[in-house]
Length: 494
Image (cartoon, rainbow, N blue to C red; front, side):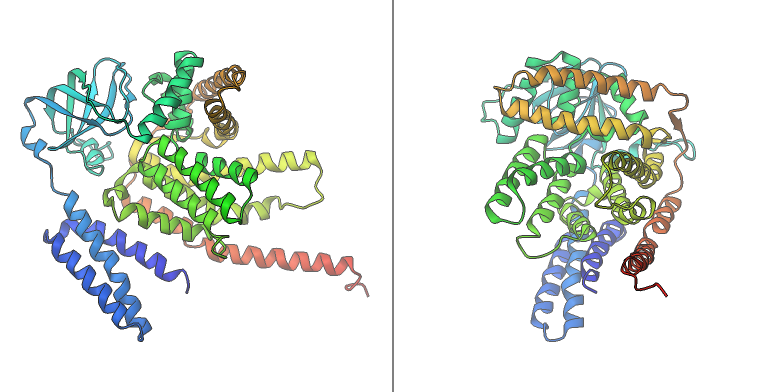
């Protein structure tokens, strides 16, 4: 009963986003209804059932209003089919294309457009540029099961594409933000101590900057299902938070606040994208729970983070990265611990060698579960299926997290210059592993996008039975432990 209001609120937010386009465009009306419902709920607190309903309805109305504000097409759609000169800010981290250029989202007062350049440029997120080229509407899917590029961009609030034959950087007299200074410091340190390709890879690990990463190497990470290590998401922030907790301790106010400050400084440097903010919010809730005398429930944290992400940015619901992150984490939360206890439970008297093999087994289990939780969405959005992902993630993800911590230490502590030599060796090994796994026969298969209804059914069948199965496994383990304890004490002997 305690979790129901939180998950009901999340369901109402999602429902509001999905039905916003079917209702008349009246965002102010829905905001008024949200305020009226909240006030009525507060006034009727003596009637718990009615008050709870009234206090939950604002989640539906507010998500309706927010979605309707961002749904209408921007003014750039009226200019499609013409040669345009657009000036604005680089909204997303530029990514290399297979043709040797860059791809990024450009934001200006008229709207957002995805710009593709023909040649590689030194561009970074936050730069102000002027792009010259032909403005077009994104192509639609022409065959069943084909990737719908227009729908993919529309779900991110991008209505047009610009194929630029020229991009000029604008030199604006403005003070760089703290995030921009942090990113520039990290990027500069990487390029000052490493070869260009290694520096581009480390920048991807540390701050999700893939602009200097060769397209073939990025494709290798995609084919092996390890592209997530090149974005600052839950895995990176969780490892960073775990190290901070080990250094400062957990449960005391001052060390926890210091750890949170460092965590958010790193999140700020890594960018303010949805994945970073989502992971930072989840990690913050986990760290603050002991201070509030509460035990952080992972599913509660996941739902809370989803609400915080979707309310201000409703179109994040359609973002493939957001979907993949939540689906994968939910699968791991639901099944990792029960299956771990079933396959190889932890015991305090295990030998070091046994613990090592158990850790490898658990790591492989997590890789398989992550693949089970992400494979339908990867197939739906990217038309790919990688059978090597569970195996490749075990060495690649472990090495990537080690390089993440070592790289942050080398950037933050300049007197640790010898670390850069070790980082270079580690990056070479990381590239070798990614290319080797990607070269395996049929490492990644091209598949047609499954129907959306089938994807939804997959996750319903995957996640809904998990609580019941977890309870059954816990009871079975409890009975087994009781039997062993009683037998050990001679209570079951005749």
